[in-house]
Image 1 (cartoon, rainbow, N blue to C red):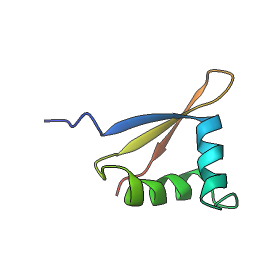
Image 2 (image 1 turned 180 degrees about the horizontal axis):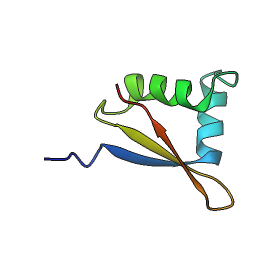
Image 3 (image 1 turned 120 degrees about the vertical axis):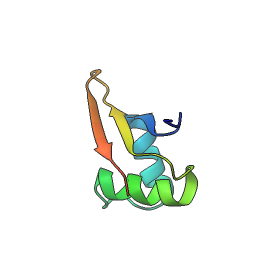
Amino acid sequence: MRSVYENREITRQVLESLKEKFNCKGMSDREFLAWYKRNYLTGYEKTITIIEPNGTKTVVRVYP
């Protein structure tokens, strides 16, 4: 059975504000999202989709 938490979405604007808040501007998106998942999300996430301002989506694998 799949968990509702396996796939999450985040906008680029929110991602950049979180990187700034945690002083992680130099990290890649994948590194930051994996760190953020371990520390602040449920831990069940397999992918996090970044929604860019132009509407395109980038899927980032954060599992394991």
